[in-house]
Structures are given as structure tokens and as C-alpha cells.
Amino acid sequence: MSHCKTIVEDNIDILVVGAGLGGTGAAYEARYWGRNKKIVIAEKANINRSGAVAQGLYAINCYMGTRFGENNPEDHVRYARIDLMGMVREDLLFDMARHVDSAVHKFEEWGLPLMKDPKRENAEGLAKGAYMREGKWQIMIHGESYKPIVAEAATKQADKVYNRIMVTHLLMDDAKDNRVAGCVGFNVRTGNYHVFKSKATIVGAGGASNIFKPRSVGEGAGRVWYAPWSSGSAYGLLIEAGAKMTQMENRIVLARFKDGYGPVGAYFLHLHTYTQNGYGEEYESNWFPALEEMVGKRYLNTEASHVSARPIPTCLRTSAIISEMNAGRGPIHMVTMEA
Image (cartoon, rainbow, N blue to C red; front, side, top):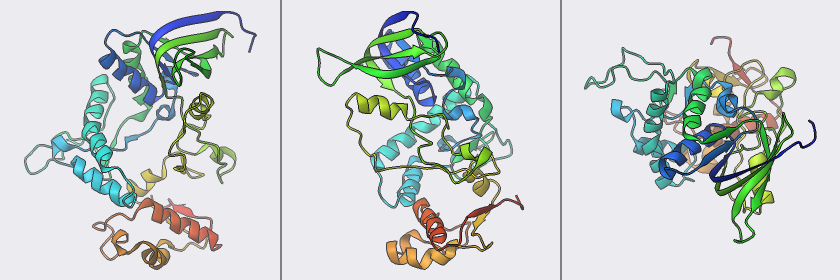
């Protein structure tokens, strides 16, 4: 990159750093609530193809379908409570579940193609044209068009979008303690140095997805959900500004597998695959007795058929995988041949 050519200053009411789905959504909402405020977005890549969703997700992972008589917010709270073994804020889960459907309808209004099944119909005849489902919660979309459609909606609401701006530091207010007053960064193409002065700053610069090296090698090394180019800039910006980082004990590492581009959930739910250990054996049920002794039977409803059984919490399934590998029977393989 060439040396700094020009210093560009901008005075803003609401600054959004990062234009993934979180940043674009924040900009859209900021216009609704902020009315005539000046809203500016600064993105290190290009708003049309930036962020995790820009990878072309093929499904929206949570849709109630309340208007079609499918699920209610209470159902989602119950599901999350079981999957996270009670360690949830039920009020927040309920509040989130109340709003997800309206967000999906907004995406469709903007032009996102959602797959529909005209044959689906419930007893009251309400589900005609309901969205095609993959499992109980997901609905199918044409994900390659997801990000540019949402980006267009956000761009229409923002006063200006700066692409190719790598924000490096947040600015603190000299007159008021513990208040962010903007940020600085540089244009990765021109070398111009940007100084953004803002009354409110929203940081949606992304988490840190590839801190932990995956087991996969070669082309498979980048197969982790969440953008491989997400460098942890949100954490870095906030920590250096003095933010107290809470809930950092929670870490999520969502796996891909070596020979497939799709998420593991797609294969489990849509293609009905399963996993086996390095000896080609079904291993999960071998760990049920130990898990039941640890957490009780309430979370391991294994006696009913797999269709009617309550889902086993994700953390317990993960525990079985780790235990099997620690016992020397790894690696764990997803069986895709029949799919």
C-alpha cells in the first residue's frame, strides 16, 4: 500500500463499523429510529460481498412460521432450554423469537428468493405457499443473493458507505470518560487516512473465527463456518478502547468437514447422514450411560424412536465425540455415501 495521501474527516451522528449482516441490519434500524440522523457505514471489504452471510448460506436457521401455525416463541424457548441444558435467559429468547419472522418477511420484501412448497397445508388451510423447511426451524433460501439484497437495503438508508476502509482504532472522547467518539482507519486501495467523528458508534466488525487451527488440511483448512477472513477486529477494537469483555468464557467452533462445502447441520437434517468413529462403528450410544450418570435421564430421551425423541443437547453430542477421540477411536467421520 502507498503512504498516506490525504486525511479525510467526517462528522457523523451514527457510525457503523463493519458491514456484514449485523452492521447492515444496524444501519437499517438506525435510520428507522434515528430519523434524520447522519448514518455512515465503514467496511474493510465491500458491503455487497462482506461478512459470513456473503458465503452464500442456503438456509435461514430460525423461522417460527407462526402465521402458518407451525411454531410459536414458546416452542423456541423450550428447544433452546433443552439444547443448552437450562443455561439460558428465557425472557431474551422469547423476545428474540417474537421478532425473527418479521425480519424474514422483510428480507422477502427486499427481494430475497425463499423456497416455497405450494403443496403444504395445515388443517385450517393456512400454510399454502409456506416456506420450504429443512428440519423444524430452518427455511430454505437462495443464499448467493442474500448479502447483496440486504446490503442494498442498508445502502438506501445510509447517508454514505465507505468501502475498503480498514478501521484500526476507536477514538475516545476527551471531554467525557468511557465514551467512544469515533474511529480512524485507512483506505486499503488509495492510502487515504480517514477520521470518523461520531456521536454514536456501532462496532460490527466480526469475531475471530480462525484463532484455533482446524484439523483439516489443504483446501479443507478454511472450512469453518463464519468467515475465514474474520480477523477478530471487533474484539481488538473494543479491548484497546478499554471495554470490559464479558461472556468470553463462551466459545463456539462450528465445524465443516474436509470434502464438503455445506454445513454439518445440512447433512444431518436434510440428507439424514450420521457419524461413525475411525473403526466404522456407531459410537454415540456407547456414551449414553456415562452421560446419563452425569446429567440425568431428562436430557437423554433415547428410548423413543429418533423421530419422536427429544433432541439430545448439542454439548452432550459434542462430549461423546471428544470422549471417543480421547479413547483413541478417532477420527470421527460423517457418512455421506448414502446421501
